[in-house]
Amino acid sequence: MSIEPITGRYVTVTVGDAPRRIYFEEAGQGTPVLCLHTAGADTRQWRHLMNDAEITATHRLIAFDMPWHGKSLPPEGFETQEYLLTTEAYIDTVLAVIDALELDRPVLAGCSMGGRIALQLAALHPDRFGGFIAIEASDFQPAWYDIDWFHRPDAHGGEMGAALVSANISPYAPEAERWATLWMFMQSGPGVFRGDLSFYTQDDSLIGRLDRIDTGRTPVHLIVGAYDLTCTPEDAQRTAAAIPGATIAVMDELGHFPMSEHPEGFRPFFADALERMATHSARAD
Image 1 (tube, rainbow, N blue to C red):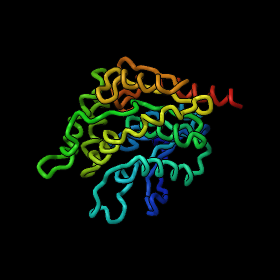
Image 2: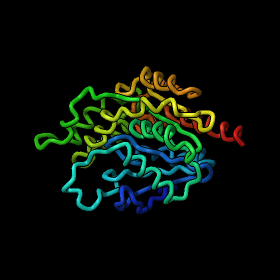
Image 3: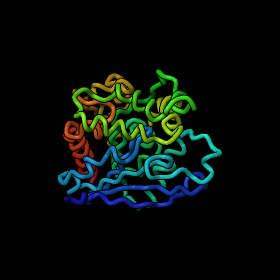
Image 4: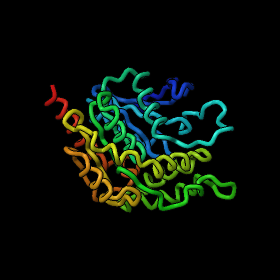
């Protein structure tokens, strides 16, 4: 029997003048790296990297469940609300967690909607971070599906979500990790995936902010999987080209959830991204 080095705790922050009790996990020591999960999922997507002794020997990986996700309960009175994630609430939540955990300019690593918000923060709050790793991220992705299917009385939203994202997982992904990734979507709370996708497919404000990103001050590195149908390599490359100084890596055998679906394949790309952040920091010093 082995006990994993990951520690989980709760922190209460204020977002929009209301309390949010947020679950977070961490492992390692050194440069703080705040890891953001995808839409409809939770911090379990990062468990493999948080168990990687070589990565955590020099980096303190921290991942948290957004409100409504994983072990972070919805706020009091959620039964009277429609959950629709907004850019403003997302940014406020990330910054509130950074403040509560007293993180000094952490590297921000986000995937999918987490990658999108990483780029928003690179444009709007670069001084709060030491670098940005935007995974499966682009300037904007309009929906090619009806998001209302994920919250209907005659359909199982979790299974519908898992069916949709299954097409975004690489055929090279190990079978066990493929199904573990899909299980997180099957467990998603009613309307949560739909609420996340509302942000992801309807807010195009990042397009007009890309030219604000100064990679000379804060580095930006994009990583995208060749088997990602939602954010294709072309989408990520278009976005990187609009950010002077941004770098990008294309993963030939990975899909939309690389850290979860194929952790072994993703690891070298993530390690390279961390090295890029460290090199930029050393040059700045």
